[in-house]
Length: 181
Image 1: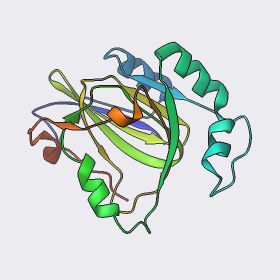
Image 2 (image 1 turned 60 degrees about the vertical axis):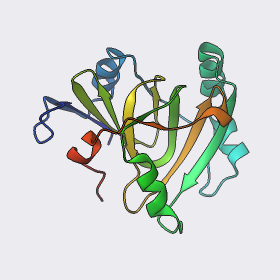
Image 3 (image 1 turned 180 degrees about the vertical axis):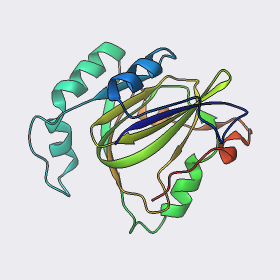
């Protein structure tokens, strides 16, 4: 189940708000400029389906978002607990960073924990199958796929080659919860 927890940046042990209601999650995140939607596939997707099949199953929503926001590229990323570089990949995204373009992810399967640091608040968003999150460029955030990752995600880009993490140097991410089993 999707979940949002909002913390004061200095109080990582006590959420100010916790909700699993999708409409409330979407409304709370919209107030800080973050997109949160739920998509349904137009066709059934079998485990291990080719990237093209996955993209076609969500073509309507993908096209709508690309036209509305100017995204130019789309791809599919898949990661599971058997991946030999899972620990290194996880570590790459656990520290607070920003990007010069939006980070848009749709979870076809599995889950991931996006944590956003906006003003003096920390928004912890557990994304599950069916969730799309759009984090605006320049937003401080980190991502945790867990020690035993399992997700398939569609990614949308303005410039796929330009997607670079710019680390802030802050240790705030280490103070907040991680994705656990």
